Length: 444
Image (cartoon, rainbow, N blue to C red):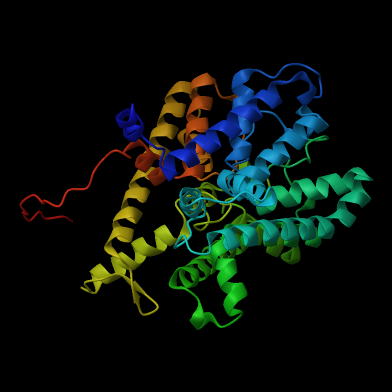
């Protein structure tokens, strides 16, 4: 009997994270299927409820029903709480309840928390989790307070609830909106030139997307950039480049029909939102193919590690470019800011890129063959799903069962992380000290 107990396999941190997200998605599906969750008082089909729940927990924003016109107040509250849990992380929320109840957090639980928020080490993880929770609530309430006067002017007393919903959705990089009562699936197109809404939503997206570890670094070292961790420096520089370059392109080559002042807001917003928020202030179906492809690339890159955003992550792309730079100049190691990047990080970055591209193209191809839509919209939807963005060219509500299941799997993969899923599946694989004989192979 004792031998059986010792042989009982414990769940790894990666498996706990996956089970946590899966459990919340299934619970959200149950609540969204209730007649009280829809405005018509009808039971929502299982697949559509599962799709919406997955999109909310995985902070994506792809929807089969317009959030404002289809779901009741109860349904919208369920979606907002799912977004909040998914954005902060299931493990972080569970840890918050444990800390509030005064329970002692074990070493295994601390290790799981470390993996969930991509912290560099276990030490100080409880303090970091507390910082994440407090910062999240403070930022979301500040965002809601900033937008409330605008929304209350347009929607009356409902404006307070709408301001909170959009603040949570923006900070968690979810992209769900409540603007579709008059025109379904309109997102924030009615506020394309409204400065307060634009600036607040963009600020919330950026703050949520650069990661809690980066903000802790900023809080600790203030504006002394040289004291930041190498990862924080890479994230800030990469984020700045990925915001500035597309915004300049959109300003000069895409949204030229707008007045100069409006064009600044529209260009900046469309550069910010693919990383990975899912709001839009213009009709993307009318954008040029070049702009749609740029948005696809931005969606695949996504946000930063330990943030509310999905995608490959800014650090992944930065490591790959830095590795290419080192190869071109015949340098042995990849490095940033006078620090060498470990070889394992380079291997992981290459693996993540390959996985995302394979999922992106395979999903788009299957949807194209199944539904008959043009290839570009299909790839746009799969990039949006795997990058947990939520932007769409309008085909998601028209998809069949197989295509919806593909997007569900892509959203889950994009939020949990490809390596997390693989590590969870291969948890029993043991490392060996022995190595096979080496032989040269020519590449390129």
